[in-house]
Image (cartoon, rainbow, N blue to C red; front, side, top):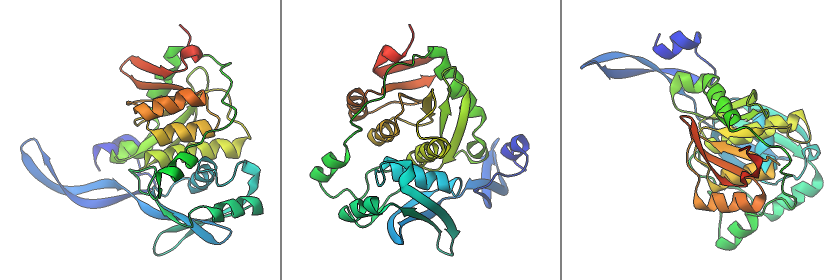
Length: 279
């Protein structure tokens, strides 16, 4: 048993124990380590495979719904009628039954797309396609809610304590939803930062039509596609433990999203729409 297992108890789901050699205190020790699983997950809509993503095999119904919403395959939760998860010898197939209108729009786009955990725009075919797909919701979230800066740090610290898979393997990201006081309502983990955020979006969508009052926190940088997913989900604020990109900041400003970065060590930087933050 390693230190992670001593802390966590039993090994968590989506991990595997593999033989490994550990160099420590000036000597090599033969033993084993917990390693995060990463599996191909095929998303099929009305019988047609649209995307194959590499993901942690956890909360896959949340992942499928969140991806479907954030990629705008459907515009509303009610357009997804059913979700089924099936394990196969080659990976996992998540089959979604969606409305006919949404299916017609999907067929008009690229028939198939392969994504990897480190890339949010794999398969985009042209600059024109990128510009079209980068579009945001017509109505930005209302800036009514205002948050105490301490709530951001309270949420980030609470999320770190609840990252069971990361504590076991050190290999995954997390996304969480916090209420206005910084108390966590939902935490989702995945080897991919985009996947973790999709899982959070899907979990919130399954619970209600609109996100509850609060904000999202993520254990990654705030790149373009992370801001895009948050804006499309109707989030008012996204707080990241690391830095944003310039494109992400511009998109957050346009979308009416409050974007905070470097939320760690008692400090943070607000890059867009600071009106949501109390002085």
